[in-house]
Length: 148
Image (cartoon, rainbow, N blue to C red):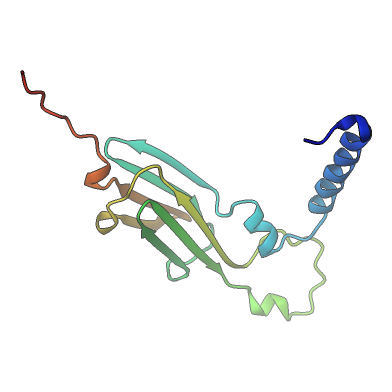
């Protein structure tokens, strides 16, 4: 274990490094790499009964650019937001570019297995909704007690 008596300024050096990272990220351009660090797309996830529902915000993304993959206890969303080529080559002078483009993936791990053959997904008004039923083996099973 590191003895701080020999490095009394270590906490201050660590704070300086952390603050530097915060400022570097705050003023860096929004790129696909930076968005993936911020867990894009944003999701809501809730359990109700024997299933879980996942909602992801995907404004401006077409259904052909969304892929939902499920295996075991994981669900993966792959999203592609293509760049607007006309805007890129129009000779515009950009003053702010916060909307990102590129390919993003987000994987959510559940504490139980999913019934992958029963998963349903839909995209409406920029919100992806995925219904994730639990696998039968993951549902609680009542055990009948025998009198002895």
